[in-house]
Image (cartoon, rainbow, N blue to C red):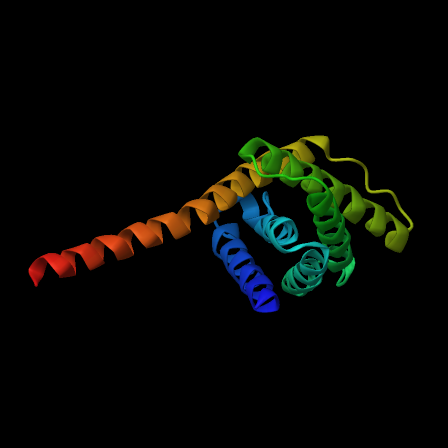
Length: 172
């Protein structure tokens, strides 16, 4: 059940990333919904789920982009595992806390990608601070929306189901 939920989370995140990426400036990825999905899986289901989501999501994202295959997968796997471990050690239940976790994960993810690229290319690409801060901010907002929606969805579902049941009883 957990693996199915993790893979479903990755599929939804990759699909949303592909659907929304064409509306960005120049088709560049200004946000990383796959990373938000990895953090979501890691905080909800633990480090193993974070690793699975990071590996699958990162490799799919690498294959679909013109980047070096494996760099995004490795960095998302590291971030997913680390987030899962920290999430199991500390209770991160408040929206602001989850936003901070997504922001820190985004920043570490981008630094890891830059470091891996510098190892592969033997050249330090420089620090695009404005782009990193923009991506971190957008990922944090997306994470807030995802976590709030996932908490509110079951309650909405139950209220609708109860309303339908009560409507049926009134007719009889």
